[in-house]
Amino acid sequence: MLQCIFLLSDSGEVMLEKQLTGHRVDRSICDWFWNHALSQGDSSKLQPVIASPTHYLFQILREGITFLACTQVEMPPLMAIEFLCRVADVLSDYLGGLNEDLIKDNFIIVYELLDEMIDNGFPLTTEPNILREMIAPPNIVSKMLSVMTGNSSNMSDTLPGATASCVPWRTTDTKYATNEVYVDLVEEMDATINRDGNLVKCEIYGEVQVNSHLSGLPDLTLSFANPSILDTVRFHPCVRFRPWESDHILSFVPPDGQFKLMSYRVRKLKSTPLYVKPQLTSDAGTCRISVMVGIRNDPGKMIDSITVQFQLPPCIRSADLSSNHGTVNILANKKCVWSIERIPKDKTPSMSGTLVLETGLERLHVFPTFEVGFRIMGIALSGVKIDKLDLKNLHTKPYKGFRALTRAGEFQVRS
Image 1 (cartoon, helix red, strand yellow):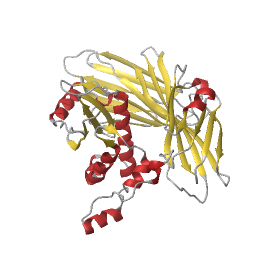
Image 2 (tube, rainbow, N blue to C red; image 1 turned 90 degrees about the vertical axis):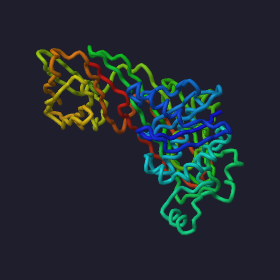
Image 3 (cartoon, rainbow, N blue to C red; image 1 turned 180 degrees about the vertical axis):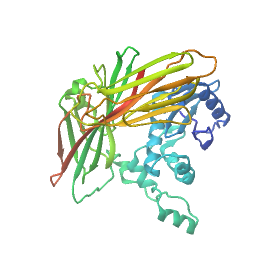
Image 4 (cartoon, rainbow, N blue to C red; image 1 turned 120 degrees about the vertical axis):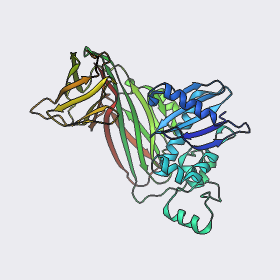
């Protein structure tokens, strides 16, 4: 049972407080949490579950906003984290994004959504389709009416029909002139390469994202060509578990619009599409740096949006870096960003330069970690392939579209 939810800005300011039970949680818990986060350094890598002296804290970070939930009783931590993820997804969908200004401008709708999504500390209604029928998303017309009438509530007077349905994630009597369904495989590659160039870890986190515009109550069946490589699968509530358990087939009645059908992991991959070779040598108060980037295994599709980033150590006084392809920028927080975009066919991109150490230091003792970014359209590097998608309970033939995308997740090269 959750007792309170706070929304914190990237500076630690409490933007929103929602007490969920009769036991009031004091705001001082936010000060304790923020001091703890600052002591850990990188807030994006903070543990999702934290035990304070008085409360259990659950937190997620989305677009610079921290969603913080508190409780003093034992509860399943994954339930609290999943609920916070649902809240973040619903707010992003309603407000068209997530930032401090959007939440402050629409705090009434945020409170109304939280009132419907959780009751006395327990998750209640989290399906976006039902919430949209209960609370109208903000728009210019509703804001003008609220100013003229003084009524700022967007609550509906009638109960959504889907609340009594066996498929509460789908709105009733959905109709389209043309039936369309699109399936996207979106994957992120997490890899760690040590200073000797050896691959320590390489795995894929993937999602099957569906955009459905189908009339009536369609029944879909999705099968993969190689489902045995999927690990740690996680499904949308619309998926029937028994067909997956017996035949590794996804059988479901889809929600209307865009949603995440499932997520998965593919572990122990043997190679990466790119190589990054950093070399650092330091002597007499300076450090010479050289970084080369190239294609290790050609995926057969264009690799673009290639970037290499690294944080300059605190002991670096100044840096002079240049590259034979792309642009090199050093930001105010001492982060170096090398934007390569695409690798040319006639040369290997390389960056080199000199780092000047602080007075009194002869050698560099803290070596940076290089973070690599890339994007490959049209292929899933994990090897996951969709075999077929069958649709039932439709009077007209639908259009089916399939796409794939792989991008870098936590892709790190140590030096």
